[in-house]
Length: 67
Image (cartoon, rainbow, N blue to C red; front, side, top):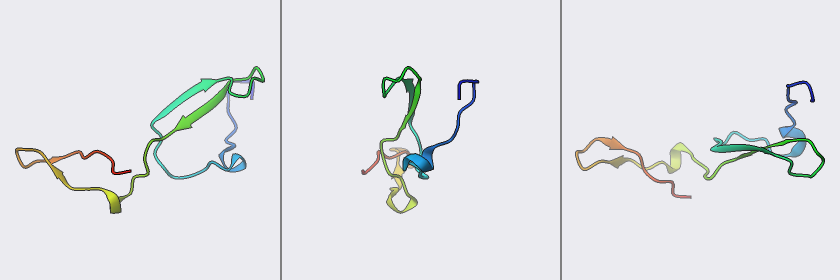
């Protein structure tokens, strides 16, 4: 907005969703001289696709994503 604030335009841009973000960066993506915020993710997590993983000691551990 030019005053240190941002306007949420995710719905207008058609990129709204409820997935988790993993990284963000500011860059002049469209070359108009104004910084754009790019937010990305790398997987689609859901409880249905989460695996139960266990360490060698039998403790609950983290699994790598399936997708």
